[in-house]
Length: 430
Image (cartoon, rainbow, N blue to C red; front, top):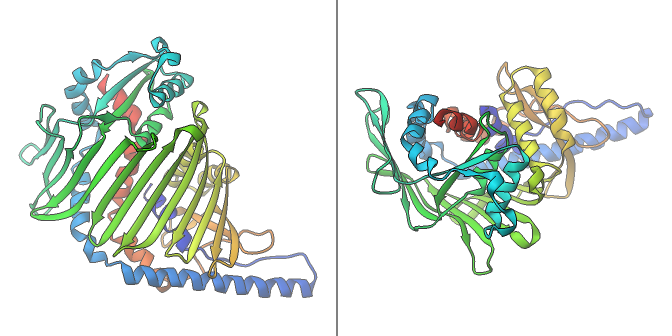
């Protein structure tokens, strides 16, 4: 699972090639090889420029406290099965009062169109009931004597998480509500709907429409920001807007739902000193949301030097296949998932000041270890897709490696797993 972070975030920075074969004449073959060699050098030069930009803008030591807080929080297993059981036992009465029978919902008279889509999608997948869990009035305190979490669901506030790090420094993560309105975050709901649980009960999380989040280690603030969830804008459309400050970096996450056009736009921007470093923008069409099929167009931009454009025929299924491939360990299983994944997307890489392009897809290989990983493959010219990572030295990707190593892999693994364990949440609270 930890390799998914590497693949999705840095795959574009680590593209490389091996050797082509051709059945053409010697002159044609020589001509092709010269062109391929030139394209390879241009791509390597572009990757080097991205690496230099990353080295100049990123200081791994700035993330030291941030990682200590997140790593320790995950090491203490706030979201393990036993604790989830405890959370749901404490919250059963809250959720029981929200239980609805989906067959009893009159979809034609539902005024909240987004709620109607949730119900319609859940019915299409075989769910019979739905409960909502409000992310509010919860306090989690790690008890060092019992080595367990104490949970107070009568906490007079938003959500507060308290725990010591490995050095004994007290850490807190706090969500403060700025509104009395609660919404269904689309990014949580869609993950809930993917696979029916054995008891056919759909769990939907409710989060405050507007809240502040602050993470501290002792007196040091390691993360701060504000989040708005599906607020209604002046144009009547819905949007989410999350702005976080981590060390010298600003992380912005925006989603806007264009109900009239059955699309929503997503943008993620990592910036520093007002300059965008890495951006991702996506436009998703949910015309077939009831069938859980979402068409998508995506654009990655790394330091305005290397760009990746994607056309995706089924974004939800792609995500499932990528996660499954990243979790797999043997080559044949990974290739099986990736073969299906590559059929659902068309990826194009732009490099060499944007005047060159290559096709891209996902393959299986080894990166700096003896384990198989998901890696990007490129087609510079001809029909062959090349293998990856072997043309570049460690120095060529030092910036990317420094960035990756600054994060505890458990952080990424646990956060991703959080979205894949919702059925366990539901089963444990019944």
